[in-house]
Length: 130
Image (cartoon, rainbow, N blue to C red):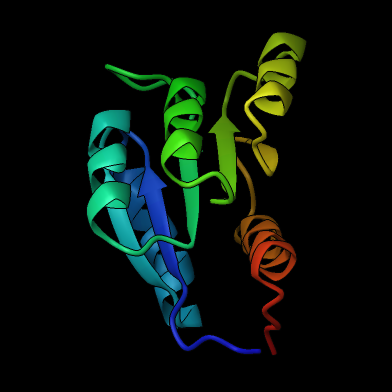
């Protein structure tokens, strides 16, 4: 099964990074939604269809891990990818506990993030991308 426009929620307190990810995914046919923090992300998931969430670890109000924990309460199967410039074993272990699909170290290449997003959507929804 193919989908025309999977929706990605990009959550990061860095506006420039959110915009960069939009320029990576929109030309690929993705619909992007953006949030500056975890509370905004939760509100978006409650009100709109979201197929995958990309979340920065270090944000005001809620961390990426706290946001994933709450997102999973709303939508248990929503694939969430945690991103951080400061990864350590504690964050990686906590990401496993909250069932993050993957953890990416910042900075990452556009091909690296596109690949993991596609893999998450394929595994979660059994979608195929050309």
